[in-house]
Length: 313
Image 1 (spheres, rainbow, N blue to C red):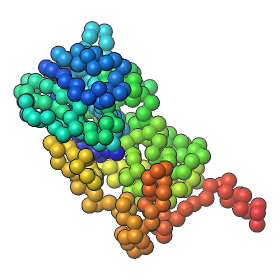
Image 2 (image 1 turned 120 degrees about the vertical axis):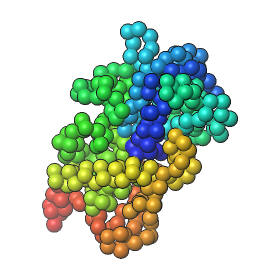
Image 3 (image 1 turned 60 degrees about the vertical axis):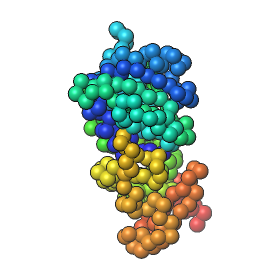
Image 4 (image 1 turned 90 degrees about the vertical axis):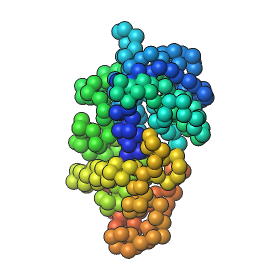
């Protein structure tokens, strides 16, 4: 599933082509692409036709396009790429893409006519028109917008570590309160957004933290080190266009990212750790896998576990 870097690469590619563009036409080829939309296909097409897009914004793994709609309303097109969704820019009248689900014909004052294609092989992604609501902290909703609003469907999603309004202290406090493992907390989009399985493993390797370490066992210093590594991994992945393992992960021009070449732990089972040479280990994790170095990333016990073992002795 695309994570923050992949989605941000798409956002950055869409922004210059869509900000200020008029939506001249909308064609829905597959209603399954509108599973998050409260209305039907006709409603989606009618609502978007004729609107002007004001921004291309992102929080975590969600994208949204605020637009000038009906008087007294603040709405946006919200996009979630799911496992294989793509948002592609094409020339007007370009042939249909494989797995194309929705097409928007837009007219930009500088770039002229363009087609925005939503293609999705596995149909887990979706588009929807959603109402914008005020952010709880009064800060801009996410990357790419100055407005202190987010779509209502995104309101429960936490800010990501690259967001200027992200609260490092609140994150450390959430770790201390948690009764779960640190990797599970990293994947909880209501605590911190944008991190998926790949970047969680990469950040934990860089921070020398075992994925099954109880979150509450991390010191404030360790939590800060982890956030530093999450940000470093994200920034490097952004510079390299994201991680592409197959043809589904591409930018708006259909080009793949190459961060997969820079992975230090993920998908490297049996290969030597870049720090100590110990073979990287893979263990099952929530129907997926965790990759880590058993020597560099030793599992720490929670205070409760330590107390129980001391009593048994």
